[in-house]
Length: 81
Image (cartoon, rainbow, N blue to C red; front, side, top):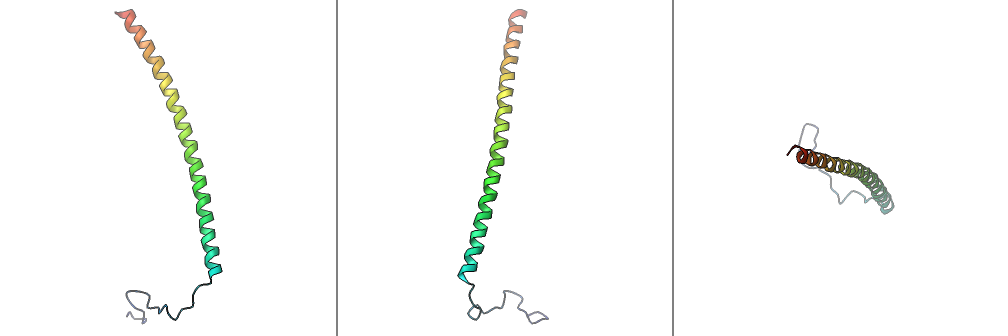
């Protein structure tokens, strides 16, 4: 026990003497948690899809630019040789 009479480890609560939570309140809390979590995951997924789409477009543009550059370098090498 500490100076205030509380146990140092654990809560010191006898759970057999504590009344149970109402099922209705528990369900409200659980439903709220599930709803908020689903909304967060939907927003997160949409943001990830948008970023991946933008990244894919940038990669496609780079690939096209690289192909054009390779073609120009190939033409230059043919002319030089």
